[in-house]
Image (cartoon, rainbow, N blue to C red; front, side):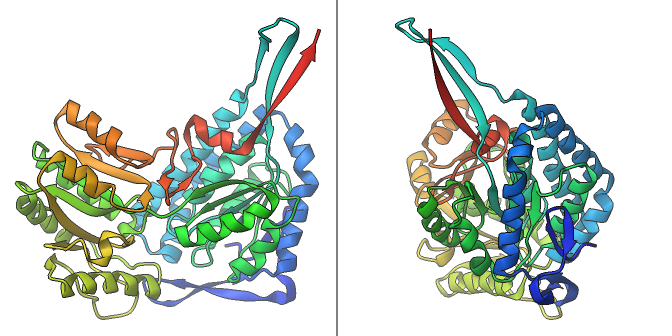
Amino acid sequence: MPNQLFIAGQWRDAEGGATFEVENPATGETLATVADASVADGKAALDAAVAVQDDWARTAPRDRGEILRRAFEIITDRTDELAEQMTAEMGKPISESKTEIAYGAEFFRWFAEEAVRISGRYSVAPNGATRLLTLKQPVGPCLMITPWNFPLAMGTRKIGPAVAAGCTMVIKPASLTPLTMLSLGEIMAEAGLPAGVLNIVTTKSTGKVMEPLIRDPRLRKLTFTGSTEVGRSLIEQSAEQVLRVSMELGGNAPFLVFEDADLDKAVEGAMLAKMRNLGEACTAANRFIVHESLAEEFASRFAAKMAEAPVGPLVEAKQRDKVAELVDDAKEQGAKVLTGGEVPEGAGYFYPPTVLTHVPQQARMWQEEIFGPVAPVFTFTDDDEALRMANDTEFGLVAYAFTESYSRAIKVYEGLHTGMVGINQGVVSNPSAPFGGMKSSGFGREGGDEGIEEYLETKYVGLAL
């Protein structure tokens, strides 16, 4: 597998031959050694992107789309190989890795079709003396910083629209899971992407290497997926150059179960919303808010399903320890454990699927993102209280609600302060829909018709008669 930096179409060592190790979270053992970029390496990557920006912007939209289409087909053909690599570096089950690969590849197919649909308009000024022309042009060189939890998809949903729009880019994958992105770079080159359009910089010193790029006047866009804490810092840095910025940050997703809900659907949806990626997802349900008349039965049935779920490793010891700390905090405040709740013995960073009841709202997991296979159950008495509880968070990425009432569903999705809502379903992510949040969950959208707009500038031309 590739383990070097990918700059200007070439694989190269980091300055001074520096490297860092990538662990297998199931064993804690070293999986691979990867180039550890310096500040100079980061600058070289941006140099490469800037050098080819104008030529790439002039490339025919159909040609840009065909490159994405070929990359989609290569990824699909190599699903098994990529899934094994992803599972080894991130820890998710092979079946989950294959699901992510299908989802991630679909962004390339979607934006391959969007490349030829970039359009403007022509109109007559109200006084008739001028013709008004608007057109869309690529924003320019982009910096993309992606997280460890979806090593392929968090990259493809940024790379896809950038390629379609005609932008060049530098991408910095998470140091915990860089291998999948390096393989994607190899695939993009094979699909015909010109040298310098996509540059991959792996490093353990993210802030040190990325900040000079963010403050470089040649960079025109920053896109980041990760924690709100880091996102705030990046937004502050981006202000110096007034960069176009899109941020997909933390979540604290409520999962509402109303008294008229179909419990079979609700439990099935809860498993999907909680256990996708072993709970290591910003879209994972974080707080299960259930009508008091159903809470006991829902929790019991949910716990039985969770007890049957396989125990997988979390990405690193630090993440596993945080999950355990949040559970211990809830238990100390009176929470009851229905299943799980203890760190197992043995190698690797495993934590069992866990369901808690009688969790007070003073517990840290009411406000903090768990990012693991832990489901706290809370209760409510009426619809207004349910919405107040759901919105009682600084985050606003996604929410889930289960009800058989059409009118209640409308009231609920209109009243939730989130960028996405799933009604009677536990998965909302779809490449053809706009992914993104409100409040401290960020701004900008990825996917859907809206996704390519993040990489385009609108220019107006007045034509005098």
